Image 1 (cartoon, rainbow, N blue to C red):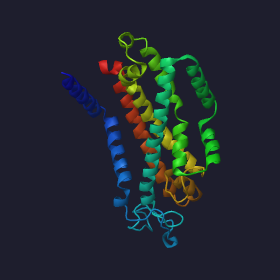
Image 2: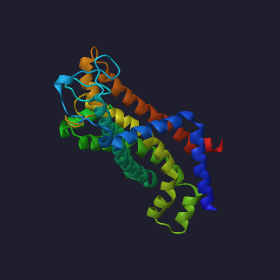
Image 3: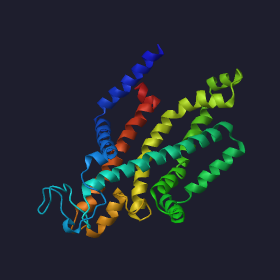
Image 4: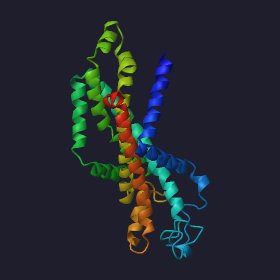
Length: 292
């Protein structure tokens, strides 16, 4: 019986996705972006960091002066734009997903502790959250990275460690309402430990909101990484990223429009698709939308 219910629920999710054309297109586009990012070495013939000043600032095909070997043109030092876009997708998605996992684990753990136990622990953690929210996000990132230095894993850790507040606040509110429910009181009455109550009864009931927050946080983190790379505090200099491509291309925006337009389109399209998917996911996990 349980298997039938799970199967039916899965079928409903897939049916809702097929009926929501915008979400379906977003999933397909994200799948294509992820495919290119994962198999970048197999799908590119040019080294993203190889420079050749003899072919600098070539326009994309089919514009006049283009070269078929560089379908999307070259940048100011002759690097292939298509290869840099594909490898840049790897960095953006890696930073987005890993940082969200880190911030999600920290935020969910702290939210469970504060929401379930309360007391002085709740006061201390929530005041820390308030202090962090008092600082503008991008300024906080700049300050921390100015101290620890740029680099891929530094960016991931900084974005992950500083992104826990949204998770902890939502999880705390959910847990505070769940801990007074009858099934939690019944588990406590039969002698269940706090650890068992949290793992068996609370965590399964907060997965939905956490997944929704995570889906929106991915796009927010990708934009933050691009902003830091644009300002020169992102990943290493030799690593191709969309934000760094925007920063380098802005000096040639009047003569080589593709240097800023193409990475800008990739960044905007990725963030838009993630937000559309997150919006659909929010409607699906909302009990009211399920009832409808």
